[in-house]
Image 1 (cartoon, rainbow, N blue to C red):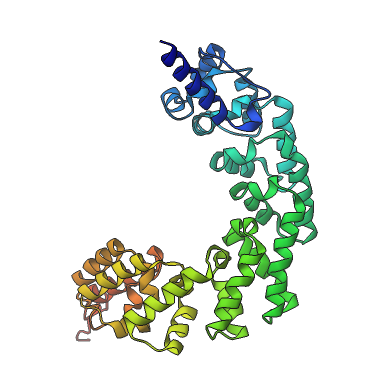
Image 2 (cartoon, rainbow, N blue to C red):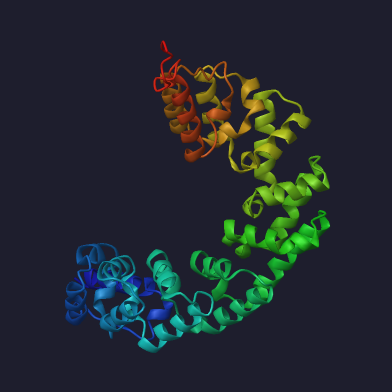
Length: 375
């Protein structure tokens, strides 16, 4: 019996420890569900089964501000169905005091003044909006810093939504990473007049670049320089990798390059050209590349074709097989044709596929042309 009691207490302690830090001081955990919260969520048509399954602990908290959250979202233009979806996905929102929610609303509207757009952001990233009041000063300071860089408000809003950690931390940390990116851009020959646009694009495409140690960027650029990429090529890579150069490391890139060169039997110059045309190759580990090479070769595609169009290696085996099958219906043989039609995004492929289909179905004569008859 004593052992069971001790085990029960330990489990309860573990559960309490797992709660988000910013919710513990202002909420009390009860063994029974807070019926006011349950009834309020029910009245809002929130999926209580989903809440109980994934965030059940929220229903045991007191106090809760369900009505206040719903009223604020409704005042911002959110429909009942949107409010229900937000609270089903992020029920922790009901634990945020009204003054904290209003402070967040004011803060976010400084970069996203259109309430309809802000509601859309909250629907997609509720955890970014309903955050701890202890982060407000850091958020405010980071907003001011990115505004001082003359970044577009939409870019700042996207950063706040998709990478909230970068706005919750001290502004000095972001300043260091941004300076590192700017220095790398300038040292690689980037034009001062284009730097703001370049930085905006990079941050927009990979907001998490701010959370990486600056040393990682320097190490990766140094490694690539040692591999023979010149200054202009490094700038091109830094831009085309869309900030994902910070997700890499010299060891992983070394293995990927060695495996790729050994498998394709190409020269270092050919390999560099392939990387410049398809920088994503640097991001794939050996096992993924091995699977994709095998899939392409088993479909009758030659290694020379892959070298000529390396972007085809960005596709999963399932996508490759599906596209090959669709193309074959229209008589396109990937073994003899260009792989350009096979690679690219879904939109790119559908456009190419549509052209092939049109070419096959186009009539040999114009059926609506007037017939030439006797006068």
